[in-house]
Length: 225
Image (cartoon, rainbow, N blue to C red):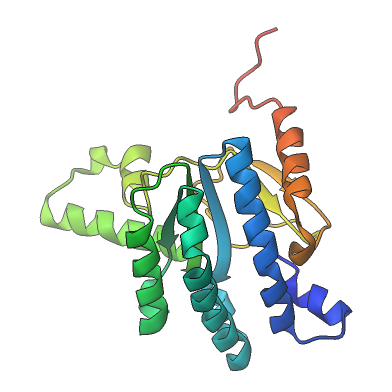
């Protein structure tokens, strides 16, 4: 979800103004995903690299996250949205972790759409953590070298029960994946749009889904005529 800062700057405001207005985009995409029958929606909200941003912006973001979740949780329940999170939670404040845990608990029985928030997330860290876990298993003799395969790797990543993404949407005209789901995106279709995230609406989501639907996914094979 890229472009909040540039959007705010273009309107003569500080970056946090862009983050505040981005909430509407999140709500729109969740609504659109429910309409289209999407089962999993992963939102890259905050990377581990983002901790290097100015403290007032980081504090404002975390405060905005807590207020937004508290305000929207009832509506999410009405829509049947299940909330989940992935990332390095040790870097988050106690208040943020409490907000996360509360939202997960309150929406745990919903099954219309799973919204996964990547918060304090780094795919390289996720992969490094996976390697350490498998190495520890091998050290203890709980796993043989020959047992280390794609399934074993997946089982030791964050939220291993979530399927690989079909479609990645990157806003704001940037054409990179920025340390996001590096393992899981192996055969994901990529969609880049110049729209800045605070301007992203359901119609933009539907345009991306329509283009995805017209693509041919071969997974390294050849389509049958």
